[in-house]
Amino acid sequence: HFSKLDEIRIRKFSQKSNLLLRFINFFCPSIYGQFDAKLALILCIFGNKKSQKNKILNIRKNINVLITGDSKTGKTTMLKFIDNLGFKSYYISGEGVTLKGLTISNIDNFKNNGLLGENGILALADQGFCIIDGLEKINNKERILFGEILQNGHLINENNKSMNKKRHLFSLTASINPKSSFYQNDLSLKENIEIDEKFINY
Image (cartoon, rainbow, N blue to C red; front, side):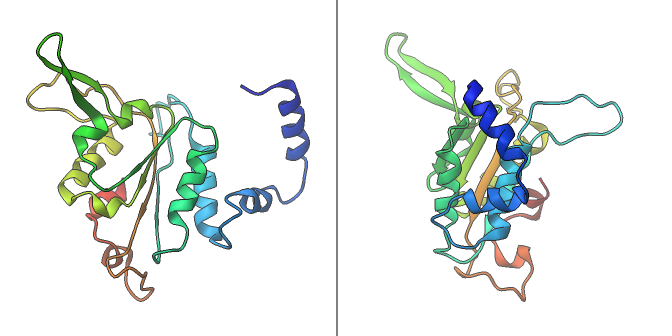
């Protein structure tokens, strides 16, 4: 929630010229350049909104952003900048991430001598941002299933169809490193990054 003073400052700022360029300059100032990456992330922030019903068009509710490029170009710093903005967001490294950890996690329930289910990252990031740094570290099978969640909003568990049916409404903001550690402009996106084409379409 904004205070009255915040609202006055926002309205005053909105009257300035070259607003988009100002936002880009304000975004993660420790990283020089990276105009396109910063623009995409800014649009992701402002594009995250609640569902709107439309009988004619299937409107995408959230913007998903996948950033790639040479190693050591500030991708991690920009993702952490979003996480520190104060929005509802959860930042995780792709290393060791599994689909079960994203959707639901089990913890020991000593009282009942069993396991107790807890919400995973996607449920916690509902109506916010799920930030994954290093998507290439997640194996391809897990990424394809993750893509199903991006497309349908939920993952149907065939063993327990009552499980994981809650829709996860979030914006995915992720980074992925090229296979050769640097991006080759003479190759296509699919040839540069080791990821299934279906996932990119989501």
